[in-house]
Picture: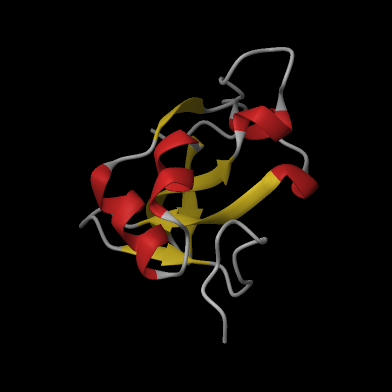
Length: 104
């Protein structure tokens, strides 16, 4: 069951999310070092897993690489979105924040 007070977890990114980020323009080596913080929640009445992708070297240089979802500052988030229960990955409308993005 969804807990609105849960702080979420942090981990390495899944292969599926990594591939989506590379497709959106993130350089492969960057995608290998970033981390993702997750939190269960609701989107349009559906159970989803929200995620925030971050670079641990920027977001927490003195803490190591693990930050929870609610510990991340918006400025440290490289990409964000949610994963549907069927595994589909959805991103919010903004572009990647300068992490090896492809030129227009």
